[in-house]
Length: 261
Image (cartoon, rainbow, N blue to C red; front, side, top):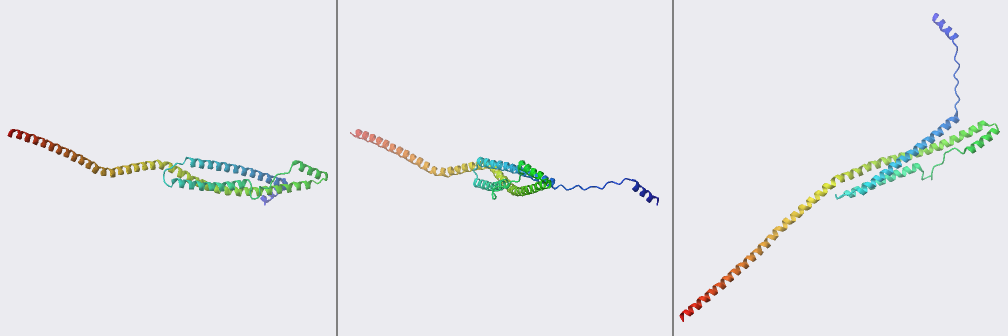
């Protein structure tokens, strides 16, 4: 019982706190803050469009540099490389279309503007409401203006985000195809000297085989020439022998005739 009495005394003696007053929800501030947040999102989306555009231009420059620097002697290597380049250009074209569509809506010839009217017009309307002592009417005008502009900017930002998402998908595919292009380029760069050396060795072997095949056919010709030469020399020798014998025979015959006389 004593404990209960002490608690009752404390509750009676301690000052009671004032009730917490709920703050009134300011709709005008909320709409204004939402509008400026949509403007910030618009600026960030525009920066992302510019960034992806820079990456796309760098990718195109790199692809054309690889195309100009590509030299090969390997069969079907140039055709394969050109096919990969063509595929890469198609993917880059799709990326560029969605990227530019996110920046400027081609189908609707642009997007509706979502900016506040001139301050001069707002101030003029404020003076009209002030003269009539109608402040809530002016606040209602501002609320409607911020709601309309925020919704318009919201739709524009969502449409830009959709275009950027599609552009990012196509750019990811183009990066994958660019990796294939680079792989083919460096593979050809490494394999082309070995292929040229192989072709040179093959050509040398073919020439040596041709000379080896043609050399036996020449040997009989030289043998016949040597034989004809030897036959001609033998004939000359036999002819000289015959003439010598006839000469010696004539001398002997004349000597014998003289002796008989």
